Amino acid sequence: MSVGIIGGGVIGLSIAFELLERGVEDITVYDPDPSAGAGQVAAGMLAPTAESNYGEEALQALMLESMGRWASFAGRVEARTGHDLAYRAEGTLLVALTGDDQAEIDRLVGYYRRAGTPIEPLTGRQLREREPLLSPRVRGGAFAPGDHQVDPRRLLGALRSLPLRFAPHKIDELSTLREDVIIIATGAGSASLTGLPVRPVKGQLLRLRGPEPLLTHVIRGVASGRHVYLVPRADGELVIGATEEERGADTTVTAGGVLDLLRPAADLVPGVAELALAETLAGLRPGTPDNAPVLGRLDGDRVLVATGHHRNGVLLAPVTGEVIADLVTRGTTSVDVTPFGAGRFT
Ligand code: GLY
Image 1 (tube, rainbow, N blue to C red):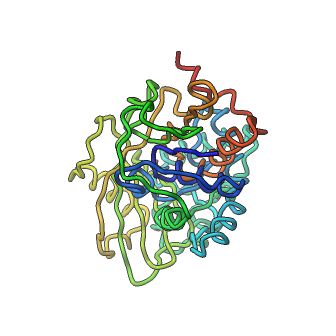
Image 2: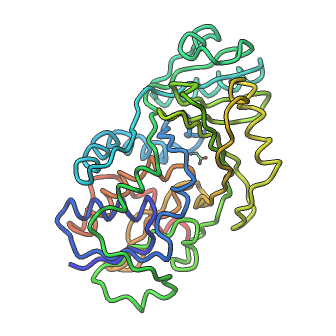
Image 3: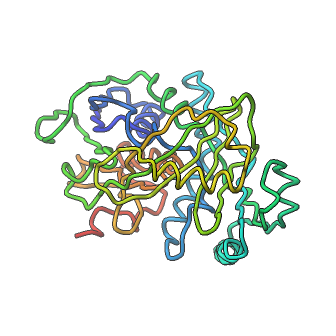
């Protein structure tokens, strides 16, 4: 069987990986600039708790399905490629600066509990016992043990090393492709090929660097109503993200975007101000009207789609790879993807 995958980002390449795992070897990845999309900018939070929102129960179920696959997915990618993905399972701390921020986190903790997601409320002192460099002004928060992290650039590097045929072409017309099966995984640019309501949602992000890590856990913080996350890497990199802006395909880094990230980050972890500002960047998340991805058949059995992963592309990569590879090789999947069909928007 020959398979053409349009889009060489985290999603397209995770599907390619799962196809290789199932013995499909004739795979061409069409992308003028593989790995240059949202995955290159992403922080790598694997956060089925902290990234879940009221009213998105079906999406959260899929996030939890994928989280349950992450450790094994990372192990299989590492075994096949010899790359280390820096998958880390310390868990995520939710952190509130003021009383109002604390009230917001308390409401979220109630929601996570009702959803059956493991969550442990912590006082400010308990938070500082786990992360001594948190500000003494931090009021309290919670621990989400099931929210992990991975380095998306390492993931992309590993997936790029797979034995795939890379064709540096932009595909504007599916009729130009000859493969038995076509998979569209073009992220924020998916609307034109699929007709689906996928739009770019801009996210600005900072990469800071110090001689050693300031933090052990991923921090998901609220500081005077401003939301921010901090993702520490073992080599001293600290990723701070991210804005969420409806500005079309604009990837300009703005002074206001940097301020909106640095201010709450330094309020929660003052030592951030001492780090070198190594990189400022902006990426485009593929958003859909219900914030959930589109997974499955688009047009008969030959054309499938995997897009619209919005804030959760890295987290959802394992389940997406499995679903699409199973549909291609077996015609069916054991994951309930009925809420994520392309038809829900027509
Ligand atoms: N998942 C984090 C973000 O999209 O910014």
